[in-house]
Length: 365
Ligand code: IPM
Ligand code: MG
Image (cartoon, rainbow, N blue to C red; front, side):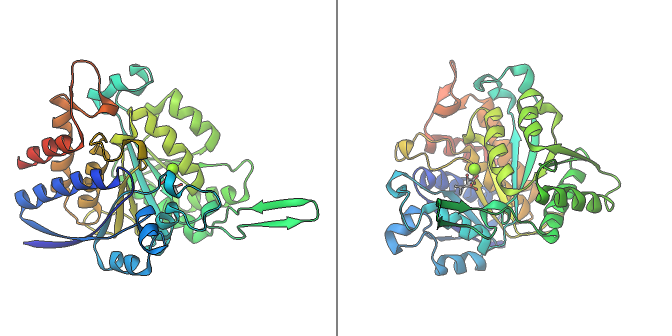
């Protein structure tokens, strides 16, 4: 029996509820495929601040490093939102990303055929949409120095810095090429090279890396044009790679194509994914902690469950198990089960834990 160690950080708001459902599905996978998953629970975000005053303690980070992967629910909430606060729940997430070297954030956007009617866009525009954003996660404006607020004789000033080294660009662009190779053999690199120096270096390095991938077609797209393209013709997109802040903004926009953030998983990887290679990673839904829905058994657990599928694929090297989870989600949607966020007339409305039960039941084969 294969053994895997998993750090589980449920976090705040709806995080713990959706994480429970992911664990439920993971246990069903263990049973069917004869794997043993050892779960190591700990606190992050607001829950950790309440307990220790820190959003991520050194012990929690150490524990995560000893595991094969990290599963995370969500962080944040109004209780910890004071702009003057010394520490914020989001700091825990950023420290985890940096501390674990998770530079590659994969955010697939797939429109489920049975959810076409639950988005705001015309069915013709979004039908069949299936692309992946690769967002650089440990550089750029989020971490660049200088980053500070200061006083001048003419008042207060603040600075954030968009800094990228060629090594940082090279490794993330490489993730893009590798993923493109396993998909449509096209890579779109998103930048703002008409204005930003860091983008001009990005574009140049992307061209250099492209020489090692003659089978992949590389296209450059300006970030503003990309924002437009996402709405105008999302079917055109396949694999996109971009820097941290652009990726943050574009992936929220992209998530609306799928109808609900409650359907979209993500993986943050510490290496370049290649067939047959296991990479350390953290897996989390792209939605937030939705404090107003917390504790009501309402939240959609699909994003977290699909994050478990990504974990099985990238960190545990179990593609068949990953597909079993994805297929189970498909089947549950086909059977008409819907949480409130994707509900439409004539379907069966269920809560978080019922949705998880339905998915887990269909792992059986
Ligand atoms: C995300 C979130 C985070 C980010 C926040 C919570 C720090 O928006 O994962 O996209 O900006 O990266
Ligand atoms: Mg974001």
